[in-house]
Amino acid sequence: MPRRTHVAATVNGEEVEFLCEPRQSLLEVLRENLRLTGAKEGCNNGNCGACTVMMNSVPVNSCIVLAVEADGAEIETVEAIARQGHMHPIQQCFLEGAALQCGVCTPGFLVAAKALLEKNPNPGEHEIRFNLAGNLCRCTGYDKIVRAVQDAAEIMQSAQPAAVK
Amino acid sequence: MIPFDYAAPATVEEAVALLAEKNGQAKILAGGTDILVQLREGLRRAELVVDVKKIPELTDLNYSPETGLVLGAAVPCYRIYENAAVAAAYPALADATRIVGGWQIQSRASVGGNLCNASPAGDTIPPLIVYDVVCRIAGPKGLREVSAAEFCAAPGRNVLEPGELLISLAFPPVAPHSGSAYQRFIPRNEMDIAVAGAASWVQLDPAGKTIEKARIALAAVSPKPVYAEEASVWLAGKPANEESFAHAGELAKKVAVPIDDMRGTREYRVHLASVLTRRTLADAVKRAT
Image 1: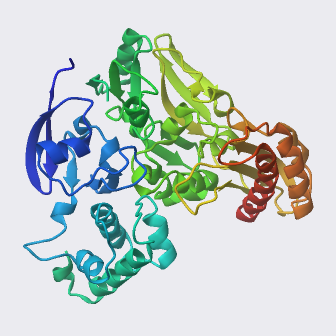
Image 2: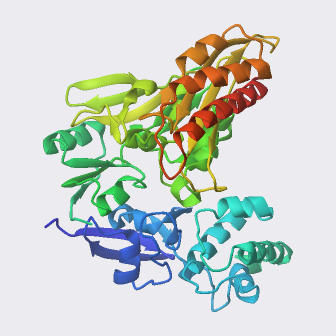
Image 3: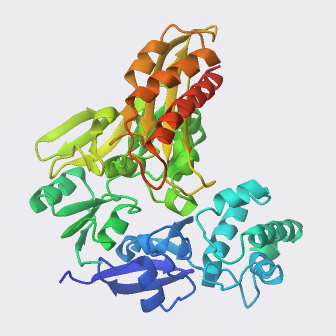
């Protein structure tokens, strides 16, 4: 039996430590050890993006990251997107634009869409579809998701910079 | 996933020692986008997973116009296409790294890993072949070099011996008046495995009218990505026009020996090899001028 490994990481701005087996995915540890159940297990093989989290400022599928690889890393999950009880514009726009049905893909879309808007505050439709291609949705047909991202981009651009982040 | 041990050595020597000690029972972890799925699905087994991302030689990306690019084997795709100088110097590589999986995959997946995984459809492999990249390998017997065209052995198999590790990929400096492109065909818009793929590299005369040298490589049309030698050699001295591109496409498809599967029939893939060769040659010429 491989020995359990000690891992220290920063998760949503807090320093955390946990013990895990080398075979455990980051997704498993986030959900089961750290009780951060926002990231979802969809395909568990890197196709669907439901488990997307930010790792050292880039989006990754946490189902195909080993938890031991997170040692020393900065992880941000969907739980960190709302601040002080206020939804982020991207969350507000998904909600108001009905950009979700069953909701399993939504946390991954929110994390990836927020990352996209931070990289490019005003993406066109093609760019949104291209950058969110690693997130699959089997309910909405994507149109409402694309529109929600466009709406969020508009709100974020017109908002005070301080109110956005 | 079946349990395994994990090690993250800091040097090539340590990594080689760990790999050699396990004699084939250790697997190398770079971006993990293939190996972790294969381990979980039982397609490969490991007693030990050796994470190579703490080894500087494997995570460094060094580019200078004079000496070319040395790409650490574990450098993720996004660091290539987000590097403006590298993307401009090696556009076929940038093309391929932008379309490997989705954004989340590109955050982790490396070109070295794509090569080692040795899929016939590996998108980044034809660019490595047309740039005539040298693969630097470390092993228990020391260092050796293999050309990218010779690195893959069969579907899912490469030339690495037990205990060996791909360190880096060495790209020659960019030749004057040269350009390159990679394209694949997929029925979806994104996130798919190539039905066929082609990379072309050309060097033109200073007037931009004649092809002096060319290299073409194809993916997903043979057991491993393949250099289309006859078409490449034929292009030398030919005018850089549609007629030449089309004829080169016809010659290139002679090396296509694809399988029939759910992604496409044999005939379709052979046809695509010709079309994609023609299109990537046209793009490569445009980028060279």
